[in-house]
Length: 540
Image (cartoon, one colour):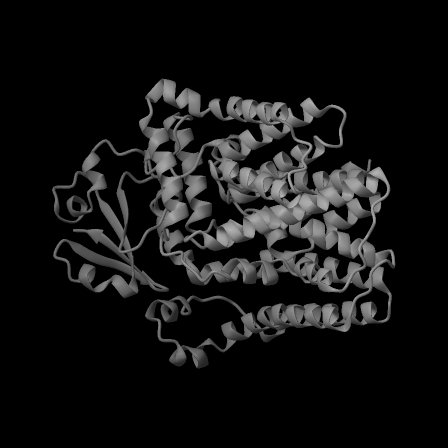
């Protein structure tokens, strides 16, 4: 019954309003388009974009979206629905693991800490691959840890291998890299003491191979090695070079986790307080200590690995959410039990980050209301044009941010007055509520500035036998939102042919205002519209 209750609450948090806003370019639209093209082409083995092989990602998450689209149709809700289900499974899993590792109360705290933190919650309402990958790789590591504490060690190894294989099928061999690094660092930290033997490693490897060969093996047997070779080459390139301009400083992900995982991230700092060395005398306590080591190792492996990796994208460090939320929940649990004390600087950090987030939410509608005063100070022509979008704002909407600030302050006051459980509940539940407001109320308005004009243009071309092409920038939206069908004339992939060749059907184009001059004066193009930073053109 308790598991059902958590599942129902999670469903209420993650499923409603999934289709309230268009998918965002690139990642959300990328995966949804791959799923749509699987349905159109009936090619369920190879991931495709623009009906050409796309070897950047394995197909498991795409298959999940395909199943969702068969249920709900090809739409934005269906593209995001699999992650909502993964969100439900994640909170139920955290409760179950927390209950087994510590007790039932801790299980509730862990689920609340995860759901009550910004990015961990927000990602379950998205259509990106990472929440699914993160759950699989976390479960693979969890069952590997359980080998030392469950009499059915072979079963634990099998489960670990299966989930590791599913993680590989979701995002690729980076799952194996993370798992091996975590195992190696744990072994070094524990001075060579580890309960995972060679037989267990063999079983993990065997069942991971069996799982991954369901796709890799079939693909090799059916189409040869070229697709798999390109897939592996891309994964290596992604780790060693900056991809698509997504570079950043070494501490990029550290800042992302501190701000994006608020409030959970602030409780990690309670580990900095001087602590007496704990002597673990019972088997349960020893097991808990070991699990904490595994979580710390996983946290640092992921954080340092993706700090070193050249490509810096927000969700690359999202696997840290599991160990971070566990370690934060453990501190929260000890605080609620009176076994840990919050220092003044702990509360000050909670106040600082909470107020900064609240101010950001409060300022957003003010920017919309007073944008004409701000535009003269903005040097980006495209951003200025984006701000011309007609989006209804009112000063009163700043109350959402102000309300969050008040709730964070109330939480801090309760914590200072030693009403710890009330303060913690207020802090995490208020974050859940404001996250919902942000997703439902603010994200659609932000999308109206950033891409809606382009999306509406593509939607207007649905059902028409035409070519659609983005000029001067990369996008997947023209394929997904125009519901593009395969083109028999393969010259379509040649931009010069579309612009200058003997085309066999109408061709429509889009570009950003900052790149538009060459196309405005192109002899074969005519401008048919312009809106919010996007210029729409048609081949004469």
